[in-house]
Image (cartoon, rainbow, N blue to C red; front, side):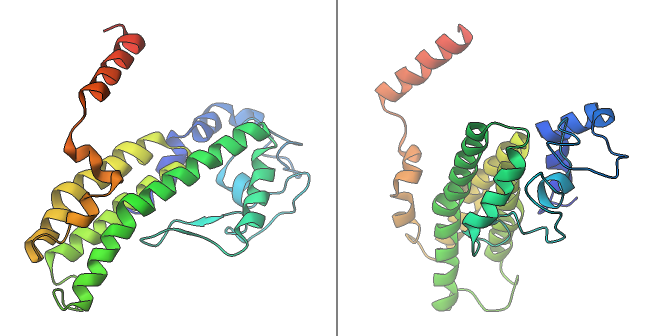
Length: 234
């Protein structure tokens, strides 16, 4: 549905979307009563998670009522009353999943968003803010190459990674998300920043998040090889 908001495609590739495609006939879709955990549990739709009733929650037309993070801006943040919002979403999840499964999902989701924020979003926005404040970029939107690169980094690639993590779409989290983020952060965004001011990215690259660029130690290489031998017999 677009490079910055592929929620439909993410849903279709997720286990929820796959179950919907295969088990619609078990979802009681023609029933006047349509309460997850009571009238059906075969698969969820978008409405199931964001709007529909549970045995303990009423129907809502506020699609943000159960959302704890905002994934729209360059740097994500938790919304006001996010604990209450998350509690409502967990109530939906727990109609079909165990509490541990639900809690584990949120650990992974939170860590993915925080990885985006700390490794890519905050450093990138910090550089952009510095360039604007120092006059190295004009205030005219999109009149310079770096602005296009930065926009696509957070608005397209970064959103896909975060949305993929929120809806359990691994291809959008990784290949259409973090892979594209990392590729363009290291091969486009940072080099373009260096073209504007040499040395401006040194402090960012000194962070532990980017230590991979220093190369792997012999011990790290050995552990990776041992893992693949054990996992794949190669």
